[in-house]
Image 1: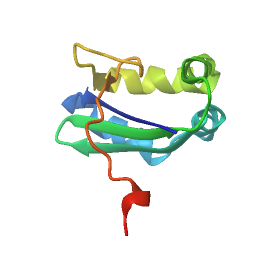
Image 2 (image 1 turned 135 degrees about the vertical axis):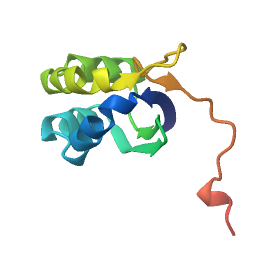
Image 3 (image 1 turned 30 degrees about the vertical axis):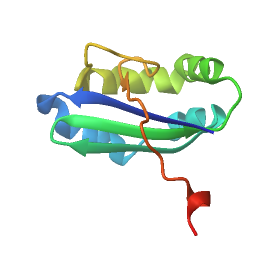
Length: 112
């Protein structure tokens, strides 16, 4: 399992639009994420900064990300959500989103 954390800025003038979209994420978008072995996808908001976290449970991360990008529902979804976002200069594997480096993780097995 691969943990992925990413961040991007939210354009303040598009905030309500972005939040409204995420109150009812399209079933086709969610299905594409599931097919690509994405689990526990969460987006957080602090001020104008979005933070996302997901777990990847597949065997070919690049191919699964490409499949998401080829999905018609996801492409239409991004046409609505992308204008709401303002990328940082250093975007990563998530397209517009910038990858964060994991520096520590509390493993459940280490608890006694």
